[in-house]
Length: 106
Image 1 (cartoon, rainbow, N blue to C red):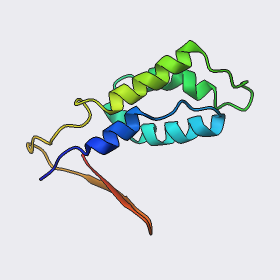
Image 2: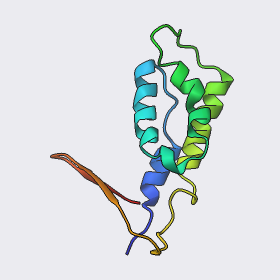
Image 3: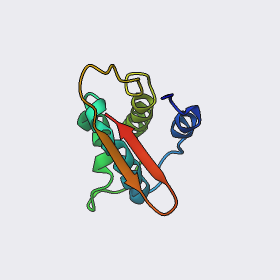
């Protein structure tokens, strides 16, 4: 049976606000993996991306908060996390380490 892991959804929804450029890079690294499923990803993530530039002073504006919350919302809604229809071929993307395994069926 294929189903959504609700604990992972809850974990993503409760991500703490990034407090440094390193935190933002980490967050964007994860969310960028799913960018093909998020319409307007570049526009949504733009305020956060700007904070990762070396010349930018780290200051969390309202636009940054909106961007962060919108990315979390878009990554945890049914539009992204749906069961496949089976009308086309599938691609499995996997990543593994000594401590874990992650896969995405696309």
